[in-house]
Amino acid sequence: MTDSSETKHKLYIETVGCQMNILDSEMVVADLRRRGYELTDNTQDADTILFNTCSVRQHAEDKIYSALGRLRLTKQKHPEKIIGVMGCMAQKDQGRIFQRAPYVDLIVGPGQLQQVPDLIERARSGERQQSALSLERTAGAAADIRRSHETFDPLRDPSMRPTPFQAYLRIQIGCDKFCTYCIVPMTRGPEQGRPPRQIVDEARILADQGTKEITLLGQTVNSYRYKDADGMTDMADLLGMLHEIDGIQRIKFVTNYPKDMTYKLLETIRDLPKVSPYLHVPAQSGSNDVLKRMKRGYTVEDYYAMMDRIEETLGDRASVSSDFIVGFCGETEAEFQMTVDLVKRCRFKNSFIFKYSERPGTKASEHLPDDVPEETKKRRNNELLAIQNVISEEDNHRFLGQTVEVLVEGPSKKADLAAAAGTPIQLTGRTHDDRIVVFDGNPRLVGELVKIGIYDVSPFTLLGTVMTEHLTMLV
Ligand code: SAH
Ligand code: SF4
Ligand code: F3S
Image (cartoon, rainbow, N blue to C red):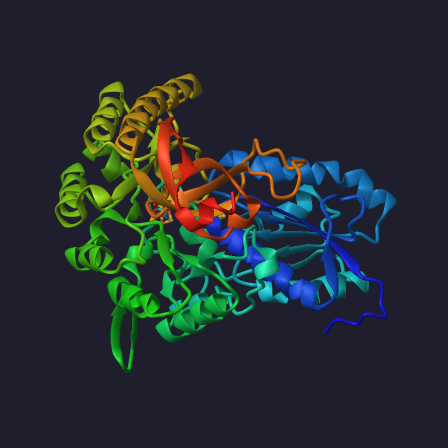
């Protein structure tokens, strides 16, 4: 509990990685704030420094190890400062983190985050190099491994989010797909759906706190399933339950797995107006041989069949985006060209393109040589990105002259924040299908759903003006 007579602890927290990590950091900060901590944005003022880390690519780890390196002298001068490493890299590297940075006080896996406040307390009273980690995936009975990957979701604190009217909600933890390149099944543990009751209760709390848009999170979110005495609840059923909650106006969900994009789910998306028709469904490659080496569990033909189902059910309301890995083990030029063909045929709203990064502990790192030269990876990355950008811009063109509904998120990067009160500034928001829209408007529009007329587009944004009549008066 907060004790106002004590001087407040000051927490600096840096978060890298995916939405799961952003949500985890929100929970940890909410927990610490309840115990009297306040946030600071620099490590000098902080008495507690936490890193929430990611292992998905080498680059994400390098960033954290160099940040830790920069703290070596700080910790020598101020041994009382507590330094903690949480998240996926903590789970993956375990004690190796202490070897590289012996002055780190705690390492905490993504399944142990509820222990962070206690671990910090113990570190303050002199316990050094503590760790709280989940069992590795072969280190015990299935049930024990599952239990060691606990979720930590009940503490919702709207002030901890970039915008109080938008929130992530975890519906599934872990992953059992074991794609050969991927570390996530090792760091986040077995796939487990959270009970639907818990999810709905949490969504109600979020709605009561003023949340208008929730984004459901899972590594393969559309594979969500939960079985109990009442029967089986799948993703479509869950969307139906969440759709009933007053106050929630938009429901998004990431990341989808192609094979589980069923007609039932697509028809549910079509029939429930609050559910976003934005579908992020990573393809990873356009070559069947590469998909096989990746052990993705589907073929290019399966992916096209899914695109057809989406088209058939949602028509041009749907916007689909994808992830790709270029330069995966043994990827030939011909195989890469098949990915180019897939991108051209599917015409994604946007794609995230990554150069393959070998991850120790994965099947690919054990059995497949990382043999595509860095230069080739870079060139393929740039080539695919250039093609995707042309498609993104062409795709955005159909919005010229149209009116779209936007949830206003806040000032744009270019906004003149020094402008006098009441003066319009440049704002940014997103459409229901996740397109970024930039327009001038009164800052009071932040958090509102507003109609915007589109007059210009780029590959990444729609530019527009506020159209809603009664709101125009505010501008
Ligand atoms: N669960 C999600 C993705 C999680 S990781 C899914 O299955 O789609 C996010 C993205 O990072 C992946 O889609 C993949 O494109 C990329 N990625 C994962 N491991 C990688 C690696 N070793 N090297 C490069 N990119 C990787
Ligand atoms: Fe990684 Fe594959 Fe699981 Fe996604 S589905 S988290 S890429 S193992
Ligand atoms: Fe990274 Fe872990 Fe997310 S490895 S991408 S933070 S699940």
